[in-house]
Structures are given as structure tokens and as C-alpha cells.
Length: 188
Image (cartoon, rainbow, N blue to C red):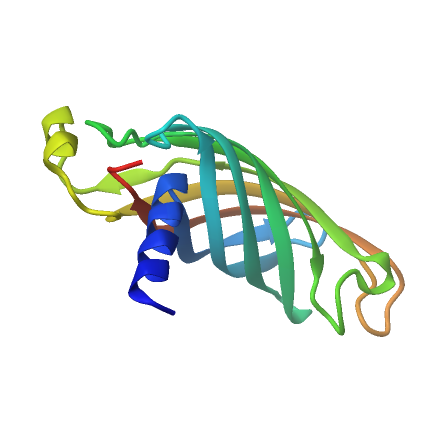
């Protein structure tokens, strides 16, 4: 990859306000009272205003889900919803609400037509000092980075066929947090 193509890729990602998340959480499956844990890697962006303060939130995630007495499974999902903030200028807090749809990754996608649907409410919290408009006027960086803590509440419904079992429907109620590294551009 040439320097020019790297700069264009960084500027494009920054112009979209892309974020990469790593985190996890715990929860419960109410029907069985089994404990559930998840570990998550996700990428998302907000499409809307030029500084990516609010708009349509789209993304994708890969998760490891562990349930007591059932073991580990991996899920792949896509996200679609709305996100607002934390504002690029003078913002600390934000809000995100999105729906997720996906599949267990077990010998391919949608094995036995297994799938999951979910809803998430998250509150990104920006770590760092607030920026002012004057900071944008003097910036010449293609991309700037910001670190956010993203606490979240989730509900997910799984329809699947665990190996050796009949069809099972499970509801998970979860609480968790991720660390998000967001890349933004001051030039676009």
C-alpha cells in the first residue's frame, strides 16, 4: 500500500468517524437462570452530520458467548440504529440505540437457519479534554483519535439448534462495557 493510498484510506475512515470496540459483559438467561458472559469486537460508524455527532449508526460485531452448562459459541452480527454524540466539540456523553441481527458461526453462517435478534442501548463517554472550534481551524491532521468508554444494556433472543438438541429459543439480558477507539477527521 502506498503512502498516498494509506492517507486516502485514513481520511475516508476519519470522514466516516469509524470506531473499533473491544469489551464484554455479563448477563442472565431468565428461563434457565444460567449466567451468560460475552466478549465482543465490533466496528461501527455514524452517517449523518459532517463531524459525525449524530446520525444513522451502522456496524458489525463478532462475539464469543459463554453460557453456564452450555459452553462457548461465536456469533456474527450487524447493527443498525441511531447514535448521537459524544459531540466532537465540547461533548462528553452520547447515546446509541440499535438493533442487531446475526447468526451463530458454527460450521458456516445460519446453520439450521439459526439466528439472533437483539436491541442495545449504550452511552459512549469520551475520555479527554473538550475541543473548541478554534482547535478545528488549526488542525491539519488527516485523522484524530479519541478513546470512549461505552457502557451498554442489551437484550438478545437466540433461535438455534445446539449440537445434539432440539430447537431452543433463549432470551439473554446483559450488561457490559467496551472501550472504543474512534478515528475522526478534522478536514472532511
